[in-house]
Image 1 (cartoon, rainbow, N blue to C red):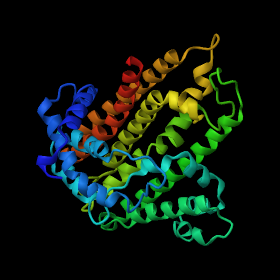
Image 2 (image 1 turned 60 degrees about the horizontal axis):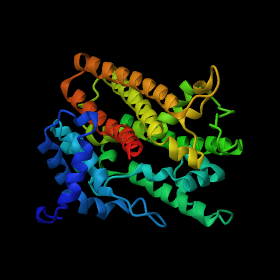
Image 3 (image 1 turned 45 degrees about the horizontal axis):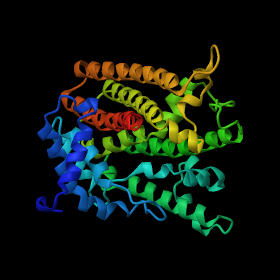
Image 4 (image 1 turned 90 degrees about the vertical axis):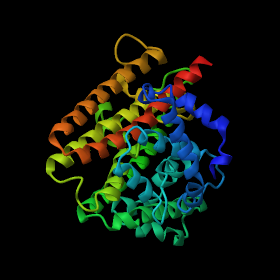
Length: 361
């Protein structure tokens, strides 16, 4: 796509929407528009490579332009060598991955029900690659594991990842494994929620959680967002010379920031998707018993306000961690972490803004 063929009306609509997000409240209008234009210019290359990993068989047409602009826009807030290198490495040989496409309920359910998932639990992805030879596997399960095998192979054999340190490669494989297992755990918990068979006019309180809400949101649920996995992947793309994470303090504070960010995004996600989650009976933060103690039931809006207060607490922790990094870590690492925070945080803000917009219509 060249500049002469840019969809002016779509760019204007996206610009208006992005201006409503807190992250862009003070951003000049021209910078948002420039980032959107850049996103559209990346679009042909993005479309060319994305289906190498995730086919979209029997799925509705999506809008990858919007997704890529969500990377381009926050990067425009502070141009740095790290930001540019990150974009270029994403397209290196294989192109960017889209882990959100793993979260379809049918795929996650197939994962949870098949014994071949031991290949993920044991960290042996080659077991997934050969699953299509299992006669007892259904056609759906074979397709799921074929895609999973391609996804894992794509990540761990990405050219930039292969040049990363042994530590960073090991960390990436660990986070990728946890990310996939979190989808299985989420699917299993959602199945338990559906089996409760409560009246549809009743707010579904999860009756058999394996953990407290705090433990769940800090472990399975935040990992499920892909934020920790994506952080480890981005680290491999940019830390090939070991210049970003130089000390234990660098790594600890970097991962602490990622942990608060993942929790924040999970809370924002569930805040904005409550109606959809209730309709599909997917486990949401607000299904946990902690939100339903006290004197009688409360309405959805009261519950969502309570969840939003917890999300803002996680934001305060994130801001404090990044602030500590400015004095404890070197500038290049701080820029990298802040870039990652901006991109990921914007996804959460989009969930909240879409929820507000839908209630105003």
